[in-house]
Image (cartoon, rainbow, N blue to C red; front, top):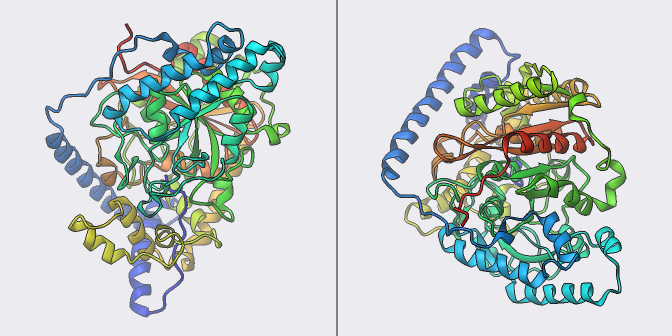
Amino acid sequence: MCRMLRFPRHHKGTRAKKEASGIRHLVYTALNPQVKISRMRWVDVVLRSVRLLFEALSRLVFGIIYYGEPHKPLPPINNLILLESATSLATKIRTKKLTSVEVVKSFIARIKEINPILNCVVDDRFDEAIEDAKAADDMIRSGKVDEQTLAKTKPFLGVPFTTKDCMAVEGLRQTAGLYIRRNFIAEKDADVVHLMREAGAIPLCVTNVSELCMWWESSNTIYGRTNNPYRSCRIVGGSSGGEGCVQSACGSPFGIGSDIGGSIRMPSFFNGIFGHKPTYGIVSNIGQEPVATGEAMEFLVTGPMCRYVQDLTPMMKVLGASNSHMLTLDQKVEVSKLRYFYVEDDGGSPLVTPVHPELRAAQKKIINHLEKAYGIKAKKVTLKKLKAALPMYFAKLASVEEAHTFCEELALKKGSVNIWTELLKWMFRLSHHTLPGLLLGVLEKFNSQSKRSDDYPKLLTMCTDLKQEIKELLGDDGVLLFPSHPTPAPYHGQPLFRAFNFVYTAVINVLLFPSTQCPLGLGSEGLPLGIQVVANHYKDHLSLAVAGELEKAFGGWVCPSEVL
């Protein structure tokens, strides 16, 4: 999702002020529960009607477009190495039950099978990875370092991993989905890639993202779009969509994502895997593009994505090694002694799609499981300020003074893209930018006066108050069950008609809480279901522990391929 968003400098002019004010009040009064009820009702009706019209139109249009289009099935799994967790692979490599070369070659072969169908991998270092694997095997065979020491100092020795194409991997392209960066080669590793290498892991490739990592469908004008492994006509999410896809399709045992509005959790949800957004400030963001500045550095976090819960904590120990003292990842958690709260939806924002019945039912199954297994009655809570989550999110991003505008980012900060010219070029297929990227530029133009609104400081205060309310609610032993997204994976292109559905993950970013997306099986359309488990600041171990409980209770990741 949005990696960087700041509204342009203020423009003078009475007419512009009136137009901006009208649009601003239309949106903010509809979403701000503190406004007068009479005004709120009619604006709410108008916006809800517009959204329902767009929803109906999108269902009709995309239903026609994809009617009868067959799903492109993935090749079956005939190599059981591909179904192993990263932790299990590391153990088998250390104990010489498998070689690193055997493991790395297995995943390379799988990527070559699936990528023509999914388009998830955009650049690779396969030859170099095999050489790295040989070196890992030589180290183990030499016996110079015993197994116990290797497990402690190089916990992922010989295991391949992947990351998204905004993270620097030395020698590979780092485009961030921006056409003007199509030939940019990273000269050194991002901090997290370096840490994984130090832990013995082997970078295999980089995966597809949205343009400048700003949209929740992974598609750009360099590499095209990535397809969902469960239904090829559906999206993989963004911006870590290629990453979620390659893991779900067994092309990688685990990987690294980043998240400023849901870019770890949404792709993990749509692809049926686990993804953890850590507490802010734990994992380094250095080596990513675009660069987060100012307060946005708190909203942007880097974290693990994987198919199995058992890989999350070991990955967090590696990625957050320099700040491990801030967390208690080794603390034993008794899930039966935690307090559980749940929120069914965002309170009914008129610009956000209602939560799908199957996702509501999945949440209900969790609540029933807790009661049957442990006698725990999860408490339903109503957080009224959540209805204003969308304007709160944009207000917080607009408060980042040091950030460049999105139009400046599109031009590599060398001037600014003329959004109107690019839109005209896009209509004739002459622009190197995506439509979602250009529309974000338009949004900036129409919100140029937002910080002058009386609602702006109120929204910032509301965000602070909501954070404190949840913090007090959770305490040291509470977790919140919260929808990861209001619907299962939509069709390609359909997010344009549901543009603000990302708010279910985005609001957690500005509140700075850790959150773990957990898969909950497949729905009636064969698409993944899931939920995010939110914990208090620096209580990542709680959400990770509950994720483990949900994996045991509901099965976790479901392989999208037939297993022979």
